[in-house]
Each structure stands twice: as structure tokens, then as C-alpha cells.
Amino acid sequence: MAFENFDLSGKTALITGAAGLLGIEHARALLESGGTVVLTDLSRPMLDDAYQELSQYFDPAKILLKAMNVTNSLEIREIAKDLQTSDIRVDILVNNAAVDPKVGKGAGMLEASRLESFPIEQWDKQLSVGLTGAFLCSQVFGSAMAQDGKGGVILNIASDLSVLAPDQRLYRKDQIDEDLQPVKPVTYSVVKAGLVGLTRYLATYWADKNVRCNALSPGGIFNGQDHEFVHRLSSLIPLGRMAHKNEYRPAVQFLCSDAAKYMNGQNVVIDGGRSVG
Image (tube, rainbow, N blue to C red; front, side, top):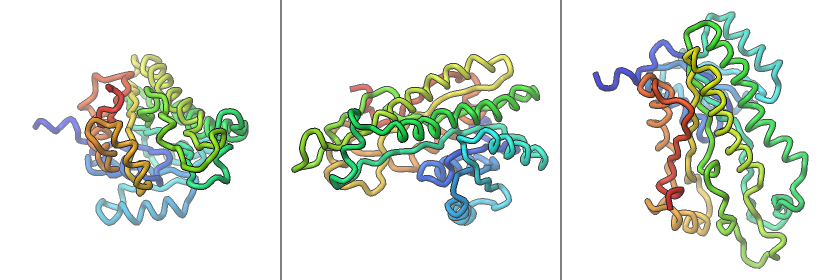
């Protein structure tokens, strides 16, 4: 009886950026709880790969695929219309799509990550996907949740860098000039902090319509990074290691279900304790 409120049977969740590392994990979490998932991403081949992986463990009928560009409001509305025509209501929106700029190992593009020379084109692109995309999807799917009286859930995937400044020492490379040292780009912090601001705004905007909005801020996830980076980051985390990709699933299940029905406007930081130091 204690876990009844985690049951998502009869609920449908739309996940943006669903073909990525965490997107697939969000889908697993919601499928495990009995929900249906609509996986959206730019790349149809990557969506097909995600479907093949997930359908080995879950009912394929509960996994729908939609190629969608979160920066294109007309495309988002067309997807919403298609789902409505198929009598599919989006009860849960997981705004996960983002451009995560990886810090390279060589000297070639390192200078471009630095604030002094960061390209405006990259600023526009990364904010468009990670922040404007979340706004546009919330505008379309959140409005629908509010209008029909049934309510719903919006979950924005932020980062521990929504509450922490990047420690640029993590990315330093030997034998590279100081003004060419790689850094975590400014856009990542701006997008993730912006998502927390959007979360708070949406949490109060549709509260009277029973639409809740929270944010989840994961810490660093191990994904084959080089040993030196892993060692540096792990030394900053009280638990002494990076996260495994599946360790955020229970939080997604909680935040998207009635187990969290009185939780609204919060940023849940799961980072092994790094942000409390």
C-alpha cells in the first residue's frame, strides 16, 4: 500500500532529449512505474536505438517515438495535435533536452569554450535548446494540462551547476597556455540556473489548475570520462564518487507521481553531497 502513489498506470509522460544518456534513464523510471512514455528527440535513428533498448524490458506498446525539435514551436504544436488526435493526453512533461558541451582533450577548440571568445552562435543555440525549448514545451503541454482541469506534472532537468559555479580546475590540461585552458562554458550554468527560475515561475502560475512543476539537479554522472577528471571530481564529492546513471530513477518516479503531490516549485539536488560543502 505504501507505494500506491508511485503508480503511473494510465499516465503518459513526454520526455524531450529522450535518446540521450539520462533521457533513456528517465524513460526507464517512468516505465517501471507503469506509465506510457513518448520519447522525443531530434534524431529519429537515435530514437529507434532507444526504443530497441527499452523494448527489451518493457511493453513496446507503451513506448512511442516522435522526432521533435524543441526550438520549433510549430513542430511542438504539431506533435501535441497528433497525440491529441490519437487520444493521448500528456500528463507528465520531462524537459530534459539540452546541449551539454563536453570539454575536449586536445587544444583545437579549447579557446572557444572560454568566456572571452565564446561564440554568440553557441550561446544562442545552447540557450535555445536547453532553456527556450523547456519554455516552449511547457507552454504547449503545460497549457493543455491546465485547460482540461485534470492537472499534471512538469519536471525540469537542471544540474548541480544550477546551484554551484563550475570548478574550472576540473578541466585543466597540462602543457596548455593559461588563456587556452578548457572550461565549462558559461551557457551550461546559465541554462541550468534558468531552468530553476522557470520551475519556480511555472509552479505558481498553474498551481490553481493542479499543475505542479519541480526541478531535478543531478550531479556528475560517470560515463567513461578520463581517470584524471574522475579523480578530481570525486575528491570534491563527500560520497567519494560520481553518480551511476540509474541512481536518479527513484527521484524521477517520486517527482512525477502522486507521491510528490504536495511538492511544488522545488529544486531537488542529488549530487553526493558536493553542494553542501
